[in-house]
Amino acid sequence: MWMSANVEGAEPPFVFRPIPGGNSNLTYRVRGSNGREFALRRPPMGRILESAHDMAREYRLISALQGSRVPVPPALGLCSDPGVNEAPFYVMGFVDGVVLHDRDAGGLIPPDDRPSVANSAVRVLANLHLLDPDEIGLGDLGRREGYLQRQLYRWARQLEASKQRDLPAMDRARGLLEDRVPRQERASVVHGDYRLGNLIVDGGKVRAVVDWELCTLGDPLADLGYLALDWIGPDEPSLWRSSAIQAGGFPRRDDMVAMYMRLTGADVSRIRYYEAFQSWRLAAILEGVYARYLHGAMANIAEVDLGELARSVERLADHALEQLGVGC
Image (cartoon, rainbow, N blue to C red; front, side):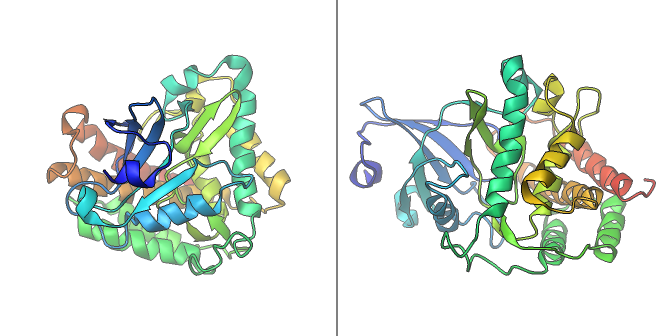
């Protein structure tokens, strides 16, 4: 078996269990006969969109960040031969802790730890953006300028390839976003999916950042906008799923943004634009997820309310318009 031959400490037979929570690449918790645990990551089943789900690229990213001030799981092995597991995959160390994917998960964090967890999430993001891509071997990861324009073009194309119905609010938001793109102040490594649900926390701090498939070089404020979109207070409605912040006891969104500004020196005056962009982009991503469910490419369809998934796309599109100061 590939794992026992290529991953140190991996002893068969292995038990594989899917880790729930993701709608794109699939992650499995793997336990060997000696009790050692790993995480295996592979592309989704069925048809996938062009340029997505590159396992070698994702593995390169977490390898480059080993030992940095951005915590990631240990990178243990990459298999590029689809004959082994029907698709390329990689193996990393399993990091135990709470994944902050919803309100219930937030409630698992001891109240006294919640401010420090929030501060750690912001500090890790700032640390990522303060890294020099050239110094960590990622200087050729992508183009540095024009990030928002490229992202708008990319997700508009993928939305057109996957959308299942007319979405006029998405079209309107896209036009406004294209017309109002702010000037990019600097370029850094951008995670591309930096939300609470991609953070594993324990002991009052972030132990690992996961799901690096959308990472590239670009405008770091896009990551801040995505974190702001996910930073939903206890009295605020959910847009697509609940937020760990809704459990209460975490700093306010404005305080989170202000902390990032202090750590990085960034101008955050256009944060509402970046949140609008991320709301629109997430809606485009979720419409693709909705399409995969409708076409039978997702295995856990019995666990999903497809009507609610479709409505979440519409809510996110409306939220993008609201952040842009336009009525729905």
